[in-house]
Image (cartoon, rainbow, N blue to C red; front, side, top):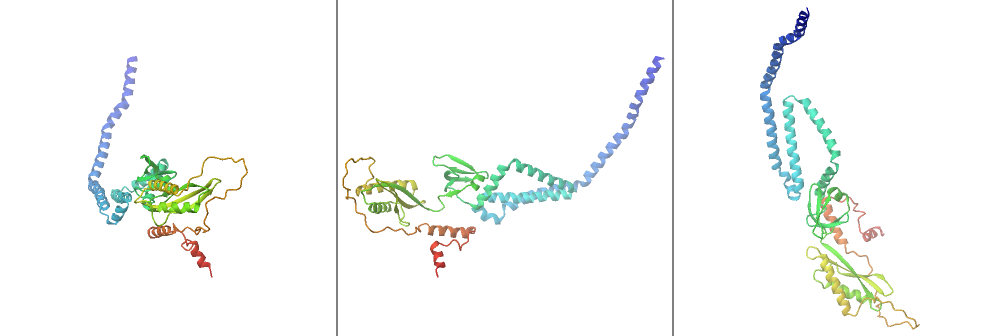
Length: 360
């Protein structure tokens, strides 16, 4: 009896398996049918798929040809190779993207186009926040290459850093310091900082101070010093060297001498050093020496010594220094010819010109 019940249980368990096994042919037939339908659809759409691939390949070829043969960019290529490469890559990328969009539209994947564009926007937003500094330096590099505040080899001062410009890359501006070290400044810092270009104007002024004893003629010392500076090789005759009294003390006066050089032909430091040597030598030959650095205490009252050098009564020139006016005018003319000046030209007149305009 128990044996019969066991056989009945086994038969009851095997019935669903037998039913499932009986349905296997139907499942296989359905799967093969779906596969066959997809293969047929693929074969039918094969010409469109091949055409879409050809469109993408043609867009790649066309993008390369157009980017290489754009005659409009030849002038940019000569003046700004950095922007030339960037614009050519942008043109090629746009043509390739247009080819991909046409191919997807040909295959009926318009919904995929929207999804791809939406995903690209989200990815671009995320990458923009993640690589904010990199993007900022890249954009600043593009703007600097367009504006060109300096050229290779220019001596500049940027945010308390001085050196000669080596190169401008997509990320940083490379300077070489006076010690021969390479200094990389982020383009964003260069773009936002105060930039002093020493080489943009070939003329550059040097100055130095020297002290003269109170018993010497300061008027003669200034004349002798300026004549000595003018005789140095490399010092320009126009603007001429000049001198002025910078400060006074009980022992004498501090005189400041200035001169101008052409940076393309002479070195500023060397010329300044030679000028200091010449001035000291010529002043010593004329008997004009520096004040003594020894303090002398007089305990006996005496009459005031009147044996000081005679100072001429002729007053020295105190008119407005117009040395830089011509150079500033030339620089403004170049700025106007290149990019335009945002300053009001009527307000940019010289003070004497405004006074003449206002006078009746």
